[in-house]
Amino acid sequence: MQDKDFVPFTREMKKDYTILVPNMLPIHFRLIISVLATFGYHMELLENTGAPVVEAGLKYTHNDACYPAVLVVGQFMDAMTSGKYDPDHTALIMFQTGGGCRASNYISLIRKALKRAGMPQVPVISMSLAGVEHHPGFQMMPKVLHCLLYAVTCGDLLMSLVNQVKPYERERGAAERLARDWTEKLSDLLGHTQRVSYRKIRAAYDEIIRDFAAIPREARDTVRVGVVGEIFVKYSPLANNDLEDFLVREGAEVMQPGLLDFCLYCVINNILDADNYGRHKAAKPIVQFAADFLNRKRQDVSDAIAKEGTFRPWTRFETVPGLTEGYIHTAVKMGEGWLLTAEMLELIEAGCGNIVCTQPFGCLPNHICGKGMMKPIKEKNPDVNILALDYDPGASRVNQENRLKLMLSNARR
Image 1 (cartoon, rainbow, N blue to C red):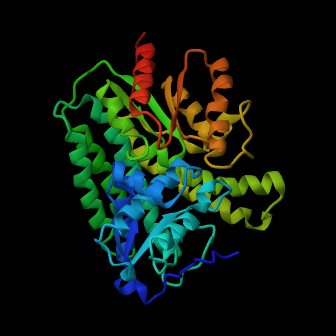
Image 2 (spheres, rainbow, N blue to C red; image 1 turned 180 degrees about the horizontal axis):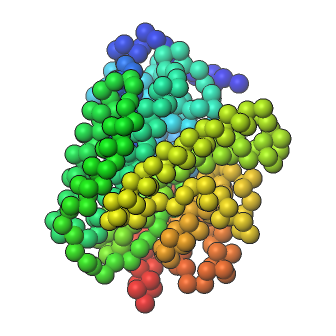
Image 3 (cartoon, one colour; image 1 turned 30 degrees about the vertical axis):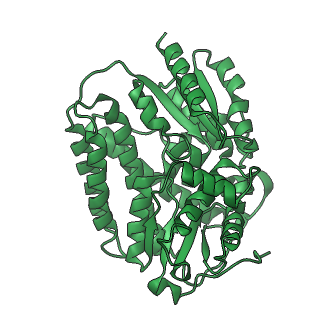
C-alpha cells in the first residue's frame, strides 16, 4: 500500500533538483554521491550535526521513534528549515533494505515531518533494491549498482586502513588527511564515466595500501576494540557521540566490519529464505550468483591488503554465517539479525577480545541479537569483554564514556 503522502521524483526533477543525503558513513557516501553524479543526479551530503539536529528530530517526530529515525529526520528537517534549500527544487533520499525493522518506516516519518513543516511537495526517495517504491526519475539500473559496488569496496578499504593507522601515527591526523585525499581521487575515478575500469580500481587498491603503509607510525600500548551494532549507530559519529575518536584518544585501536558485509548479509538472507522457507526458489541461482560476485570483489580487497603485508586482511565472508552455529539461527534476520552475533564472533576469532555493541534504546532486534547473545558468547569465550551501550536523545554521554573507560581499564588488566 502506497504512502498517502507519496510524492514521486520525476524525470523532469532530475534536471534541476538537489537531493540531500543523510550522513552515516562520510567516506562511503561521498564516493556514492560521485558515482550517482555521473548518472545525472545532483546530490549533497548533509554535515549538520549536534544538538540542533536532535532537537529538530524530536520536534518533527516523537519519542517513540527509534534514535536513528530521530537523527535522520532531525538532520533533514534542520537542513530544510534553515532557509538554505528551496523546497520546490529539493528532494531527500533514504537508503532502505525494506525489511521488517522500524527503519522501513523512516520514509513515512520523513514525509510526515515535511508535511508538518509546510513542505509536503518535497519528494522523499526510497533507495532500495527491495522495490519499496517507484520513482520514475531515480532508477537503480545494473550499471549504476555495479559502479556503486566499487564506491563501497573503496570506502571499506579506506575505513579499515584509517582504523589500523590512526592509533599509531606519529603526526596526528595523517591517516584521516590521506583518506580525504584518496576520497577525492576516487571520486574522480568513480565519477568520471558510467563505466568503471576494474583494472584501475585494483591498481587504486594497491596504491592506497602503499600510501597508508608509508605513514610514519610508532609502537604504542593499545587495546583492540571492536564496534558492532545497529548499522546507523555503529557507523555514524552523530549517533554514537564520536565513539571511534573517543576510543582512539583513550588508547584503543578500533575494528569495524565493513558496509559491504551488511550488503552481503542482505543478499544471503534471500538464499537462506529459499533454504529455510522455500521462498523464491526459482530466483535462488541468480541471488547466489550475486552473492558469489560480491564475495569475490570483497576478497580482492582483502587479498591486496594481504599481499602488501603491513595491515590485517579481512576474514573471508563465506565463513561468517557459519560462526553463528550454536548461538543463533540464520533465520533471525530482523534488523542486523544473525550478522550482529556473527560480527562479534568474527572479531573474537580475529583476536579482538573487547567489543562495544551499540544499539538504539528500545531496538528489540538488536537487543536480542546483540545484548541477548552476550551471555552465550561469554560462556564459550570467558576472556571476552563485551559492553552494550544504548543510545537515545536522553542518554548521558558522560555515563557512556565512563563505562567505556571502565571497559578499557578491565581490558588492560
